[in-house]
Image (cartoon, rainbow, N blue to C red; front, side, top):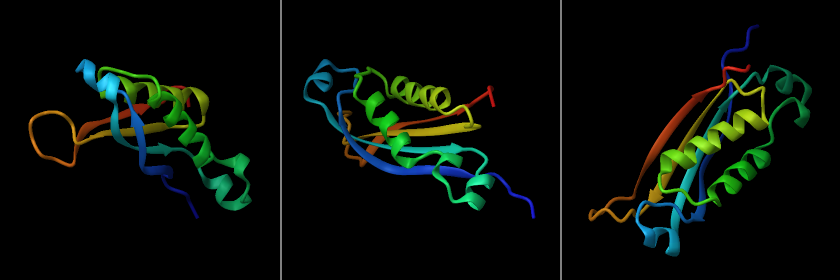
Length: 125
């Protein structure tokens, strides 16, 4: 038996934050959703059933919450911070994909959200 690619994910974590190009967005804030997918070898955890052989969802969530708490003008910037921090804090990560969506963005149109998806390959694995 051979294990293929595996990942851990968090889907649509809702966070109130203060990101945006317009000054008012940094004052009033708004609703965001962050999704995260982290690729790593999960073979050992699938056999051992031990948390130390994987990455805790709660630890990943804390990274997202801490980075979202720092205001940025661009969602690209906050997504990049989240991705770099995940790779730094968890060196066993092969790659990370971060999706940050601003709910009801102030762009003069009616939509559920707008945002970015960033994929970072950890070249230290």
